[in-house]
Amino acid sequence: MESRCGRRPGGPGHAQKLDWRMVAHQEAEATTTTTVDPMRLASRWRSPAEWVATAAALDSEPMPSELNTANSSGLFAVVSVDKMSVKYLGVNHHGHDVGVVQADCPAPMHRAVYYFEMTVRNAGLKGQTSIGFTTESFKMRRQPGWESQSCGYHGDDGYLYRGPGKSESFGPKFTSGDIIGAGINYIEQLLFFTKNGSLIGAFPKDIKGPLYPTIAVHSQDEE
Image 1 (cartoon, rainbow, N blue to C red):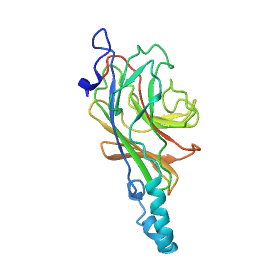
Image 2 (cartoon, one colour; image 1 turned 180 degrees about the horizontal axis):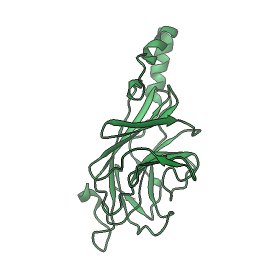
Image 3 (tube, rainbow, N blue to C red; image 1 turned 30 degrees about the vertical axis):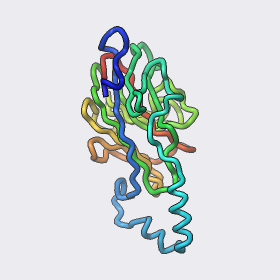
Image 4 (tube, rainbow, N blue to C red; image 1 turned 135 degrees about the vertical axis):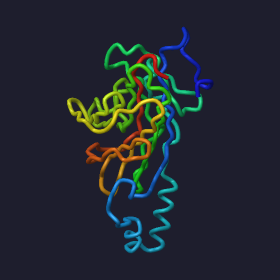
């Protein structure tokens, strides 16, 4: 990934990079302990024609496939040519110089579960990487979870952030080599996060409107 992204002019030491993989899952079992298969149960209530229409709607719904280079904090981060990774270019003087970027479209809503992952390539000096969901109007110079109508799981402290003044101890910190996931369980109306394939925790989905998968970097000497 480094050969595609390059480094900031002036030498190394001011880059932080995340490489993400977006994966769509439709198995509700990923975030629930119930033994009921809601999709199979729903099939008892729909005719074959209705299921054909449902399948067509699923196929036509856009899926996030890359990072959005048009709507990102370009002053503090650069997205790779393949639009699958981001690295930090700022100097982290304050809370409004975050390198944050959304996916190219919102998470699909007509399914049981949506899920995506990112890989932290190098946590570097402070490890202030984060992952979460934001709305279209989110301030693109802030960490996900620092503003209303957003949430974020942060690597430097393991805290969950759900808006101004709303933070709580949530899970372990994460660092270089960790794979962190974020998802939406539409069946139970929950948001959840994972670390290296294991569920960290889930909480009520209280953010309204379409949600954009979002990742952020915010620290010097990280790549």
